[in-house]
Length: 314
Image (cartoon, rainbow, N blue to C red; front, side, top):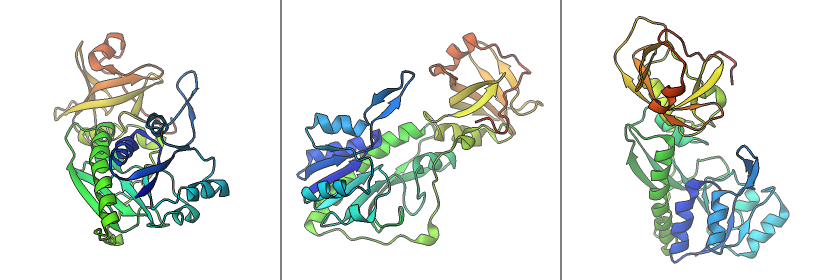
């Protein structure tokens, strides 16, 4: 079949590679615009663009998905189907371009975690299992009929980053399986049970603020679910510090949450509402992430001093 692939971030790369290596033909790749990143604010192209160019595929970077020029360009490829992986909400005019409809790879077992951040929320909520869903796109976000699902265990030390890598791989394999099935007329679409739907909204800065009154296990899941980006954070002496990995202990001290209760050359223990949180990877504002031992070499905090996350500090 003739495919137009639509995706932007790293998560979409395995799917693009898998389809390219299959018997299906990618006629064009559509992605978001180049953006400024890093301290020098250099223009950087999306990961999908870099890969598409290396594969010799036509690249399309629209400034608007409602552009008539974009619609006409997509129609000129006469695609059988659109494959969407980590992209924007598509207008009706684009969904009407392919002959056999449009499919989307979503990183959850739908209808659970409809929305922009399913991987983050699965870890933040302490789930033990997640997976991927491939579904037929409908105008309402993440509500289309399911074509295929694959389950995966969430490991105790998985982060949003590591889990995304794993899901992108099984998703890529599933995408090709679905395309083969559609071509042969063997796929059956199953409607979602809307009453079971849960939301996975976009991650905003206020969610990333660590509330030390919460249980240490809850905070560890928050940290994992926001790592490596955007990162859970607190403040120490007015300086923002991100915690990107942490261990927990049931040990407890009679100190206020956020207080440093353990500190030597190799470990840092912070009191929470229940148990201790021991940061393992830390990033001081404006610096690169460090393991806890490297961080502690330059950290001036003492036992009895506190980490705080004041309201309104974003």
